[in-house]
Length: 94
View 1 (cartoon, rainbow, N blue to C red):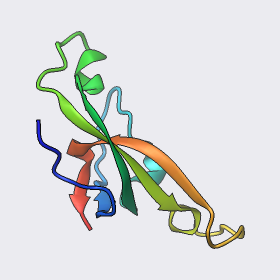
View 2: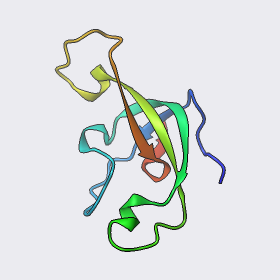
View 3: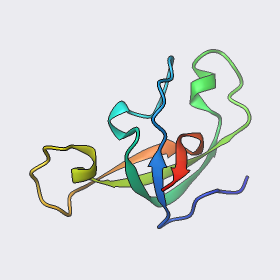
View 4: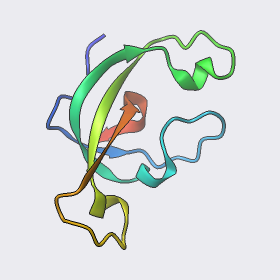
């Protein structure tokens, strides 16, 4: 499986209201981050959670966000970041 994104790529997390077992936190949906690294391909946990095989595999990425991008009232240091692992089907080019 080939990765759609590479380290350094800016991505936007899709902002969709999806019921069920979703591994993408609400507070990052609609936000922009940078691919830190490619973690690898794994069965889709959203399908595994409801008894399916999780196939086809989905690419998983570590995405780095500026804290100020995530929280409107963030008053920490401008260089503070948060990294979250997010599956490719939740990502779009920024």
